Amino acid sequence: MPSLPIPDERFAFDAGKGEVSASFARPKGAVGLLVVAHGAGGGMDHPFLVGFTRALNSDGVATVRFNFPYMEARRRSPDPEHVAVTAWRAAFDVASARAKGLRVFAGGKSYGGRMASVAVAEGMDAAGLVFLGYPLHPPGRPERVRDQHLYGIDVPMLFLEGTRDPFADADLMARVLKELSDRATLHAVEGGDHSFNLPGTKRDAREVGASLAAPAAAFIREHA
Image (cartoon, rainbow, N blue to C red; front, side, top):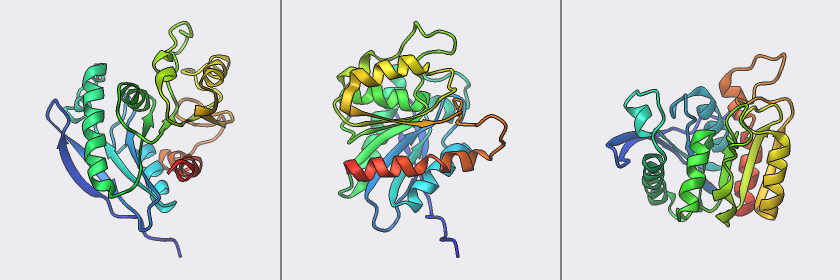
């Protein structure tokens, strides 16, 4: 008989540009806590993130999801970097208050994960970073590599990347990973695009998100 989903605690917190929504879930015997931010085009309740975090909960990892201010206000354009980083710090603080001894990790889908890495590069004290499709460069613009701040980060990083992701040229990603050395681990999803969809298949976004939970949970267990 399948186990019941871990109940979410819905709450709000001040992200610097007003209050934003968040969701917290902690399974019994949790080994760590991952704060997860959404991508540029979908909020914290996007099925991909819900599927990912619920699967993490089932694997013993507590989670916090949250909205950036622009998403809470239902604007289409993502927040500027300084606004997003301020929101990240606030989210990390409220998650740490609920962690009760658990190590707190940070990450997210695309834009949300990149903003987590900027916050960590600027001093946010995460135990590690989990990237769900790191946007290394804009599609078709491999000369605009978003990597410089990564080299100043000294915590472990997990890159979950589709091999067909137009935001992450494979050769460029290999170069970045080589420079990061043992701080970085790559989990490649063969054939996956930026949303981790596979050619010739149709999967629900919740199922796609859930399929990425096992390597993320293993990474958190290793570094918790």
